[in-house]
Length: 317
Image (cartoon, rainbow, N blue to C red; front, side):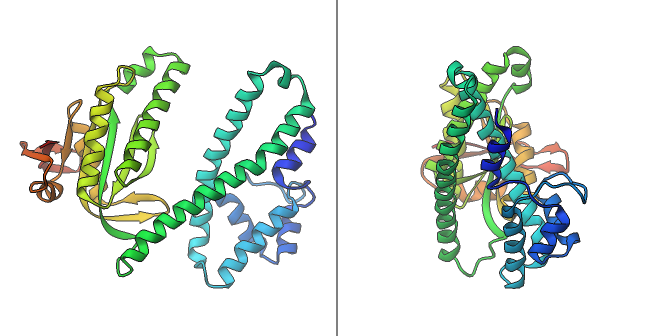
């Protein structure tokens, strides 16, 4: 395969520069450029290795302009780069696997290097357009929520946090072949993302057999957890799930969520029985008088970090 041409397409140009030359041409101190490179998740390279392109110079220069313009605080530069690197590396890995599957399943394509390069040339702009569209739609959705409550702190706000966890996942990994396990995970992720979106929630992250989500409204969060438990119970191909929900102030940072509310939701999930949803006292108080839901108190439990955690069982009204 013409690996040089393929690499040039993917990198947006040929490798021409060392890291010292990139820093010099971008007008950025080499120490700072190196910190950015590492934060993005790339391996450190030697001073004399020619591995960078014109696009790398543009990227470093743009990052520097964001700082100098005041749009991005210098203390946030590395965390922002780290978050971008983490999420985009996972996206890139999935896209390469998708391309590899396409090539290996098409014998004629796999034997023709020129066709592979042409395919990548055609697909790359299309993928960029789709990613740009999805990014802009999420920007618009988040901006809409932020502008609706301009007085609220976007980093620390009151929301409902939920975990939904597949029961018996460890046993499943021992029993199923890799392809079968992949199909189960794909079905669960598809169902979870659909249900969460339908109920106005947001997926924070998928953690193997578990999904972490947030929702602004208690009724929406309750609907997500109950619907997921019902839909998985009705699907013979999926294991049962259990869920834990908690409401309160959370810290939202670079797409992830933190705080005691997140911990409580996780602990409730760990003690929930298959097919059940447990919620904390705060959320129970908010749902108790809403039509369509029934809340029942359970005996306090001791879990890691909490000696008397008071769970409530959530059901349909």
